[in-house]
Image (cartoon, rainbow, N blue to C red; front, side, top):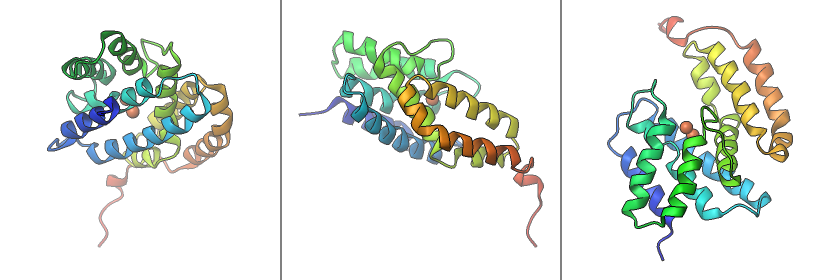
Length: 193
Ligand SMILES: [Fe+2]
Ligand SMILES: [Fe+2]
């Protein structure tokens, strides 16, 4: 039996292959962490549908590989997810459920309304707290942006109060660390001679 989330994973990896996206390696690492967080949260929220949640996770950032950074990849990911799922002969009602998860994962103009959409949004944000993404970006001279991103991530994790409580110490540690971190750009420091 073919599991749709395995097919979605293969689809994501096929889009990653040969792509020269600047954050390609980071994106693959990010996806692994989001999947891991998704599985952790699913164990606590048995009311959620595993198939909808995991398939949404594998598809949520696929649009990032197809569009410029300034465009909203949640929109592009939804379009690609719909096309991919339809090509698999996936049931239309389930396509709608996954499309909502993917479209709302940034908690931007569309908010997560279903438990599966909330799990994706929380897993997505939680993954940043357990990776080096903040530090990677702060070295690019984006300190203010990163501090705001940390706040947005923690706000979105609040969609599931139990997970927010679990992650509060980690959030507070990041907040302290990032606030005292030097405000510099690694490339401006100069070469080692
Ligand atoms: Fe995303
Ligand atoms: Fe993501």
